[in-house]
Amino acid sequence: MFDRFDMDVRALCVIAMVAMTPIQGQQPSVPLRLASPDGAYALFGNEQAARLWLERTPTHQRMIVAKVAVQTLTLSWSPDSAAFILNDREVSDLEISYLYDVKTLDRLDLRSRILAADSEAVRFVQSEYSAHAYFHAIRWLDAPHVEVQLHGYTGGTRNGNTVRPGDCFDLRYRAGGDGTVRKVSQQVSPINDKTGCEGLE
Image (cartoon, rainbow, N blue to C red):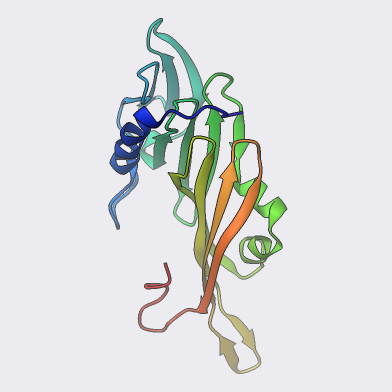
């Protein structure tokens, strides 16, 4: 999957990604229509119906991608228009990322792939002390690969009269449309009483 790469549309993809990335502190949102770099497809949402659709532009054929609240999504097309990222922050303490093949609408759950490939990620996400864990596909590295960030913090633990603060974590991965995952970095530090997790990323 995703074996084509077209340098001519890379700039268009970057523009689409910037347009879809929320400003710090703002709620992520999706415009009503986001065209693919080659113009062959468009993603569009309907807030009232809670649907995300894919339209084949030449024929206007439409297919439902997902039944989701479009206000919670961020989206980005691959440089070659063969795939797109869907980040869904459905609730305040969780975000999940998916990679879709545009021709089949097969969905790759990046959260599941990362947890299967990295025991460190499991420790942060599935610990009884986990508080917030966000999987966010940040950007396309090339046509078949995306950079995914797993970040958040764990709750503190008590041992008698002693309380150990939770940890801030920021893990980065290179994930491919074929399901391959490779960790590229990991940062972990105790939550700072004054700044929280600010400055870790």
